[in-house]
Amino acid sequence: MRKMTLALTTLALAAVGFAVPATAHASAGCNAAWPGRDGNVRAWKDWDCAGGLLGVTAGNDSNWSDGSGGFQGSAGNAASSVMNSGYVGGKDVVAFYYFSNYSGGYGCLKPGELYVDDLTRDHFTDGHSMNDNILSHQWVTESACAAGSFIS
Image (cartoon, rainbow, N blue to C red; front, top):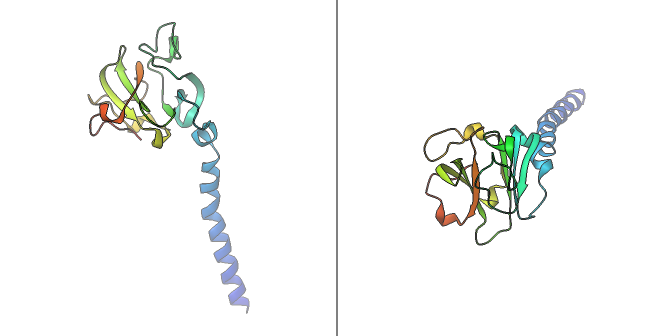
């Protein structure tokens, strides 16, 4: 009986040990920042939707470094995580660009992907890292994005 109790206790502790990290991760960062479908695109300075919100908008922004639009001034070349909480249907994919005025390489974020919590994993279609390199974005249809341009 003692061996059975010890085995069950060990098994229970092992199960708790595996469950705690998954639960802790699910309640932090981008998961906690998710607002639901509100029609916007967002970007943060640091990974996992932390370090300060750089901007939020339902529209396009041709220059994240200028003084107009949802992303302004220091938002240009500063994003390390992005979110697509746009409405599903039509132009529901966000295309992020390496240069202003929707030019240079790009990376597309589908609405079903929700967010990218670490842009160091992703590259624009021209090969540049997306981390700290976004200067514009626009809403497009999925068919406007080339194969291999989708980020996650």
